[in-house]
Amino acid sequence: MGDTLQASYRQAMRSLTSAVCVVTTRYRERRFGMTATSVTSLSMSPPSLLFCVNASASLHDPVVGSGRFCVNILDACQEHLAQDFGGKLAREDRFRGGVWSEGDYREPCLDDAQANVFCRVDAIHDYATHSIVIGLVSEVRVRGTVTPLLYQDGRYTVGLGDGIDWVVSIGG
Ligand SMILES: Cc1cc2nc3c(=O)[nH]c(=O)nc-3n(C[C@H](O)[C@H](O)[C@H](O)COP(=O)(O)O)c2cc1C
Image 1 (spheres, protein in one colour):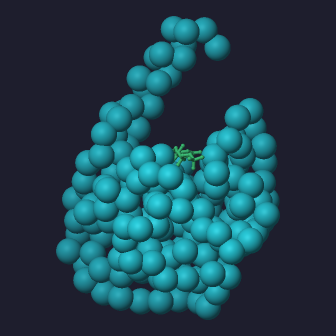
Image 2 (cartoon, helix red, strand yellow; image 1 turned 180 degrees about the vertical axis):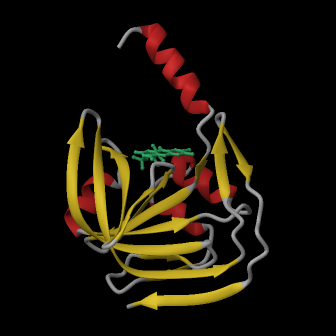
């Protein structure tokens, strides 16, 4: 890819606003986590999503090895966690902030995230530097208002909350 095309593509992506998530897993008794904006809903039937992970990221091989992961959809007040899991802190240190519990497979679950979506890895497609990981949803925990942390133009920002206030847990 030419420098000009790469630069203009990068510039175009700065105008693509994305919700910020922390994807986590547990593998061989260790916790791993990474900030990700590549999480996308794939299908409602079956409930499934995907995210893209760089093959060099510390989360990559543990997700492949464990076959399980949790998508923690961050709240507007959790920018510090996005920074920590985006590489600011060393790996296990990333879990010092936030209140963490566990899923059925001991995946780290951020209790005060907007939502936690637990998945089993159903398919992985390698593409260039990244793997596209497709997860089949096995459990969902949602809570509170819809107040997403967003990433746009290389910065964190917040969306408009809708004021919904409810708590529900589905699946198991
Ligand atoms: C806002 C934001 C979004 C990111 N989204 C992704 C992503 O979708 N996929 C990815 O592989 N890395 C993404 N990254 C980079 C990883 O979070 C970062 O490289 C990783 O946590 C650090 O690598 P390490 O765990 O190997 O130290 C993102 C970083 C930030 C700050």
